[in-house]
Amino acid sequence: MLESTFGDRARTLLTASRRSDVPPFMVMDVMAAAARIEAAGGHVIHMEVGQPAAPAPKTALAAARAALDDGRIDYTSALGIPSLRARIAKHYRDTYGCTVDPERIVVTTGSSGGFILAFLSMFEPGDRVAVTVPGYPPYRHILTALGCEPVLIETSSATRHALTGEALLAAHRKAPLKGVLVGSPANPTGTMMSREALASLMAAAESAGIRFISDEIYHGLDYAFAAVSAAELSPHALVINSFSKYFCMTGWRIGWMVVPQALVRPIDRLHGNLAISVPTLSQIAAEAAFEGRAELDAIKHGYEDNRKILIEGLPKAGLSKFLPVDGAFYLYADVSEFSDDSFDFAKRLLEEAHVAATPGVDFDPIDGRHFVRFSYAGSTADMKEAVERIGAWLHKR
Ligand SMILES: Cc1ncc(COP(=O)(O)O)c(C=O)c1O
Image 1 (tube, helix red, strand yellow):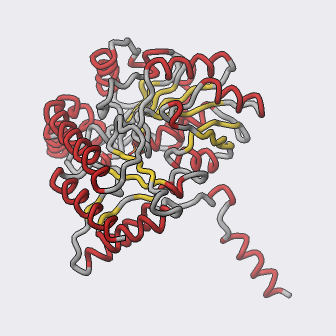
Image 2 (cartoon, helix red, strand yellow):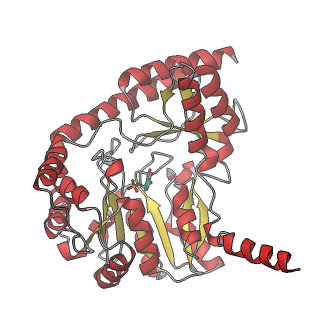
């Protein structure tokens, strides 16, 4: 009796919370399988991971080295080093021609840290927040972990895979929404929203009192047309961005937000309690990264070459259906004529052709079994080789 009570209590003590029960990223399984092939001597072309192959720009590395030589790495203010916040505000003037008060800039631990602060400051537990499918899985998983309800809205080729005001308002009529989150350029699709599409979606959200969050992590990596920031269109939108992608600083874990004025102080209080501040060395490096634009633009041109190789080469190889390849470094291919199980398709592509890609089921629980995401953030030589391998593999099937 005593035994079993103790056992029950121990079980209760050791059980994880329901909110922590979020799904893992399947791409991790692909990476592990690729590592096994490499350990056995195989040469895998990595198109599964969404991260630049290049290191942080030299200006950032030099600033970080100088800070280390100086020695002291202290806490900073919870909202970030003032000179970095001012530099980010200048970035909005230079890039989008819009004035943003540096007071509204919040430095975060990657955009991932930004999502937590954004959701905590904007929503109550139980609030319904719309996200698009296909979409970046942590949007819905972070919302769930924080007790909010992600509401999945499907996008289609009819709207260039952009969420429309009509679709948003239709979902809102079914059951009220408190917020909506979109990304452009988007992951996994690589599609972008035009200025008109973004403005009309934001107007619809505002008319219904739905709070608007714009994930702009892939800004700077736009090829089809210039990306538009939600900060240009409304002071009420919350913009999330990062140094991870264009700035090639994934592991530095640094990003930023442009937040509505009314949220500055609440986020200051939240961040002070949750994290005190963002790693100081990363903040120093990030400020200097803005001076590395020439180096970063050269890397972007490499992605443009890769994009062209895939857009021209994949149809010849046999993969002719993919979404508009507008931005970021992703191509989202429809593989339904070969398989209705994209996980199995990606597994065999890896095992038999040694090309690693991510199955769409990671991003889209509804239709992802028909899609595979290819990242073209790798080298141009690898992209050429990948097209060859995919072509030979598909022809053998
Ligand atoms: C669409 C999107 N948003 C956010 C993130 C998170 O990036 P980070 O936390 O490195 O800024 C990623 C990472 O791949 C992403 O693809």
